[in-house]
Amino acid sequence: MQVQHTEVCRTDPNCELCEGMSSWDGNKKSLKYGWFTSNGSRARGGEFPIEATPQFVEMAVRLGRDLKLLDANGNPIPGGEFLTGLLQAAIRSGCKLSFA
Image (cartoon, helix red, strand yellow):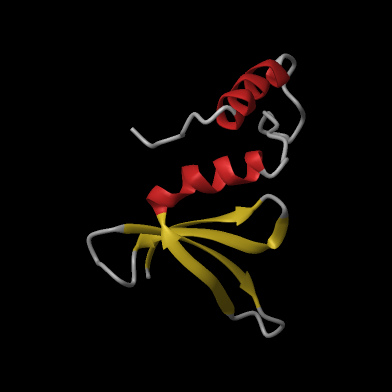
């Protein structure tokens, strides 16, 4: 993967999310979850097509994971449960997510 963007993972500051050109096709975007080894070098997990991201979210919701809408400080946004509830209900009823 040719990494074009990284950001620290919210759930673990010792991990990162990477986005870039895929290792299997230099014209396609992909994502990776990576972490740092004890000696500080970067280890990388599995790579998957960026287009699969919406389906990952759908699968998590169907398996019972709850979505939360948080502000920049990680606090729940008042009324956010209404929006996430609608999204979860739509996914659980068979609606699909997609990038535009």
